[in-house]
Amino acid sequence: MEIPVPYGSPEPIEPAPAGSIVVGHDGSEGAQLALEMAMDFAGPLMAPVVIARAWSIITAPRPEAWSEGYVPPFDEFAQAVKKGMVEDALPVIQKYPNVQVSYSPVHAPPLKSLIDVSREARMLVVGTRGRGGLAGMLLGSVSEQCVRHASCAVLVVRDENTSRRHH
Image (cartoon, rainbow, N blue to C red; front, side, top):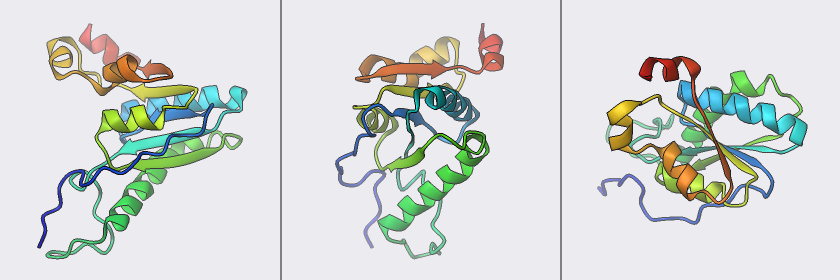
């Protein structure tokens, strides 16, 4: 049996439609805040929102067909990731019925996923996990790297409560 590797063979990452707002969403509280902010911007701009999530076989939820000794097809992992994205985003997106939302589960590392998906976007919106001080500097956050490498505007949404704890 072949052991699955985290990202397997690289597939081209489809960019979000030009003029859209891309939100990096990993299911965290920071990601929910970023999604809320993106939806706030999208309404008045009449821009579609693309929710992007990086995943690997290791981080993907187990598909329904998963069982001990059986590795489901790759597509089932992708479907399980998308299902999780939809469930995570629902509490926020249902507040914005006039905003068009789509989902982009990307089988690639987080930075590559966000940079490639947002290549033609109007804006990339990301949250933070709240690591401050030395830990944040040493680890190098995805949000910081997005600011450095994205080809569109980047909005980093910080949780006010987390920010206050670290300063």
